[in-house]
Image (cartoon, rainbow, N blue to C red; front, side):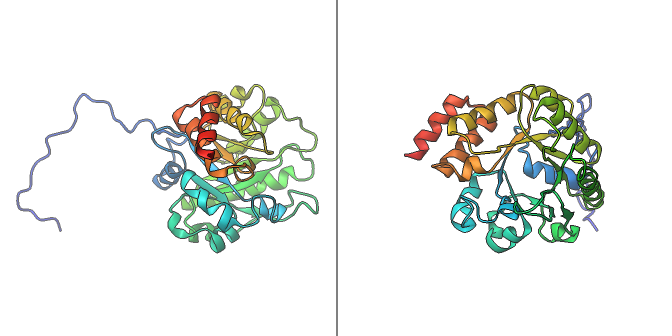
Length: 290
């Protein structure tokens, strides 16, 4: 029991001042529980509301692709520059030191490789996400794929149910369906479907008209880097996406396949969080590459 000696009556109630807790810095999260908000705040910097995620989960379908041959040598040195790490449970457990102290977005579905038909995925056990103390779980959604659409949306919905139970956000990752074009109409639909089915974050691609994609999605969008681009073009992608409403970037190949990965992720971080222009970011990249 608290010591009753020198018990002082409260006097500083801030009368006449509006509550500072009415708005949360993450889109669509104001009504979430404390655990959800805490985990989201690890991913999205409270000062900027943005995030630079380092994606290196490619091996779960591609194996040891270029730049990911040795996670311990190629990726671990980059983790200090990322706001969040996106990887599989196998790599997290075997290769990422626990003392890097970075939030993790765990790839939470798996099932096929590039050797067969993609997207035939199932969801991993929620207990693994809890054991690994992850800040989010990522699940693929193949909107527009006649065979896999319902299965992948079901995976997302089931994961969101479990995430809500345990306070773990879920990121819906949009995979382009076979019959769909990579345009704002498709990405708006796919992103909105993810959010409507419980995703608290959406990962999708940048496109012409992206501002409509971001505006119509009630939760934060992070953009996928996609294929390897020349460094300046990748920085332009980040800059344009942020200015058109993205809350962050989830970059993989454009970082770990860069000629100077550490310089590249620092330049991306500066563009996303410090509002550097692509030219300024590229100049930073060149300086850090020396």
